[in-house]
Length: 96
Image (cartoon, rainbow, N blue to C red; front, side):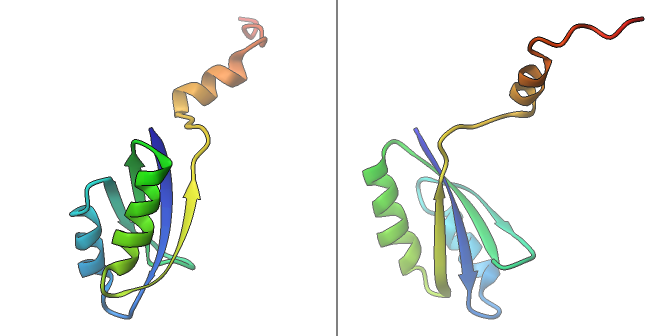
């Protein structure tokens, strides 16, 4: 499984319709309207890199209203539980 974070800039006023078009695409699991340098953040989860390339280059970038994208490919996923366990390794229990 390949997970990617797609950072998206949209044309003014087009963010809601672009978000809807994104979540209608197979492989896009979530879309967030955000503040900052980007208008939307989409999470893509697909089987392999070829599918990701097709999804982003052919499908996402062809959605009307998208001006630019920047795709980040995840190497590893860390959950809150994983991070807590990592910090607990080798640490003795605090004295009571």
